Image (cartoon, rainbow, N blue to C red; front, side):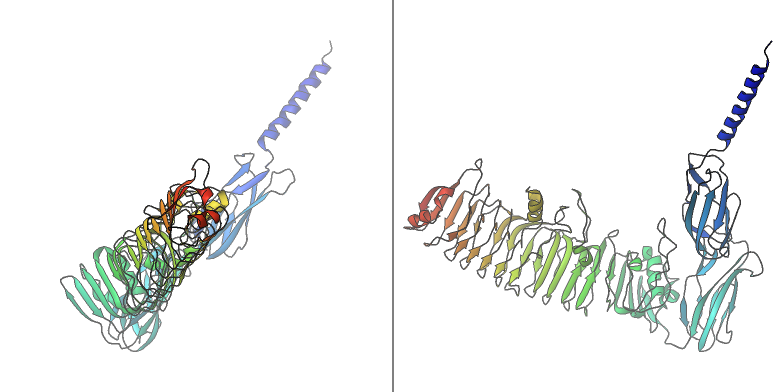
Length: 616
């Protein structure tokens, strides 16, 4: 009986089965990554279990862990990370089952010391005056099990009690420390604030029927005066303010109806604000107030119905679009004002203003867009621009008519406007392509719109330069060869000044004008594509007109009557009154008595069904 081959077969199958079992237990890891936490900011005194994802998926891969700096954190087998000190750390993990290949991954973390943080960076108090120091714990859910300890570096200058209340004793400087834990124990946290004790005039104030009127010779005193007051129908401040004063307004915005800072100026110092950390970014640094600067993080939290700005702000003031003021007031004294994003029902500007920039940084910003309208700064009630204003650059949405003062010499408007009027006479001699910009990429969105009952161009204006009133429709046409009327200027009527001498290339390209257009006596030239595809139904050409450039009135679908007042026909460029076969020729051309032959000779006849001589 032959048994040996069978035994060998069984042994072979057993060996193969064992090899197969080993292969399934330890597959080859080809790629590796460290899984992210909700935040890449980690805190000392805590433990974090890191995990990985592999391809192919392995439930319990063999790994080797390490860190870029062992003084900042330790990491144990299994990915247990223990931050020891603040700093930036990179964690590395290497696969030990990759078939001899090096498969490695890393992730960066920002390490922050857990513990206590003071809200003030600097405090100034009088001798014998007290001030309670505010503090917070990080991370936000940290709950210490032991009490804070406080100390002063110079108790002859200032003392501090167990509640963090500082008392000034004599002129000088001291540092106040707050400590959580013990340097000899496993956990320790400490922060400090500079305290200056010097005699200054005590703040003077009145508080009547909810109205607080405060005069302070040094900044930061408001919180001490007002902290126990229940409600503020209005707060008026005189003297310097800093971060501590601004933080009081922010933290008590629910109790403040109106805030008048017209007799204040912003100086450096006081409390700071901590920005929100963005996903994947390191822990941000605190934002502090500096001389003449209102940081956006502060401005965007001043959610107070009526706000009057401080004097002398030199940088962009950006309130954001998340809150609509009832009233936003700029005090007298400003000659130049730079506003970022804002929304208000009423905006009051000073008579002293000479240069106004609204959302200027975004005017020329490239942005892709679709049909959805973009949110921009807005004013609901009529905006009164002061006489004396010389330069206006604005990205705005206005819900009421806008009058441009006669003093304006340079202008750029972008946004949505229902009605625009120019005061006459004007210092503007021409409106150029930057007058009415499409925001912000001329090809990609539909933001810039002007809808006016009547647009009155001012006396003194001599020239409409190329694309002056074309908004965004011209650029979109050049790119796509497609006319979209919603990008064009929308007017019921347009009135030209007698001073106008030239209408240049595409100045009113595709303009949607409901009423007949009368061009002024004195106008000498109309440029290439000037009224191309415009919706006007009737146009009157003055006797002063000398030339009509190529396709100046081409493809105007509703144009039925052209009334020429000059006995000498203006010279024609190519296809000035061109129409498609479907549109047909223009109904009629009316010319002065006795001048019909001259107009026929000049080449007008092919564009019109009839040429009539006027009765008079």
